[in-house]
Length: 385
Image 1 (tube, helix red, strand yellow):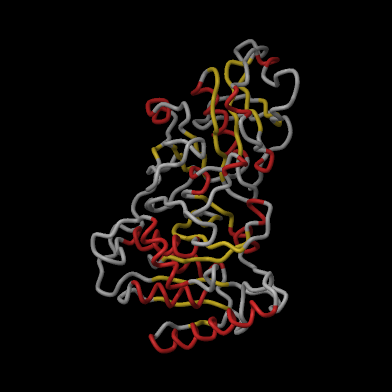
Image 2 (cartoon, rainbow, N blue to C red):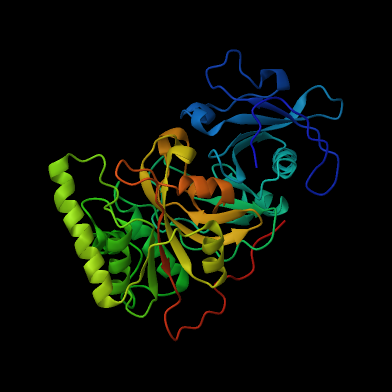
């Protein structure tokens, strides 16, 4: 699964019809206007953020005479993922969207998303897109559109969880657990909503100050949901996520991690010392379990920061995740982070964590269906092409 970085022609469309499109890199500082030769104009809103980290490109569709372009779309995507995102369209909307879908098919991608800055529900539906559930908390001004759409180019993505963006830089672990349980229909307290109070409450029980390490997170999840089977997967018995602290700061956090292991044994949370393989993640999801997975953001965002994501669906060649964080300054929004397909090989690399004291490790927490619960409907029908 790759993304284009140079001009190309796509000789087929989403329904088998001939579609010819030109793909060129997009640089908002280019002079003259990069769309001027297409008889179109770059909207000012396309230039408001630096999207260079996500390979911005213009997909332009020629007119019948092959000269002027009748439509163009601004397209981006996180690196090492399995989708394309339409940021916006000018000209003939359906022609441009059809060309992007053709591009995605030609590259072997599994999904196309469309941010709802100017997209109408009617145009989205006509192009085969379904609306995404809006975020549980509306995006701040300029941080993302209020609406978004998705078109799957394969079967089997599963049902859509709610999207909730973490409100701090350190509560990703707590948010992934809360979203997993909301997806499973099991809030911590009957009637509790997915909000900042729930986020911070669960984080407070899981934190290793301020990050959540795998064992502490697993213990907190089991305490919050006593009927949910929980297993921690961590292929090292050494403390983790401590390298950036001075020695005196590492010592007491390491002590807390050992305490978490003791507590895990006391309340019956298994700590599996073998590495959880990608096949194991797929199998867990197939059993209607959720997998909280520790990854590095260096592949998708360009900086090596440990981060928790939720694995909740599988499609051919990729795992569908929820990422509770989006890099708004790079044009990355909740539309990117929600229902995000990551190829197996990419996810395998992202979740191979490095540490000065540990020669590589993988951390994960699997959460099973609550004992005695009805598991029907969790992986319901997906929106497909």
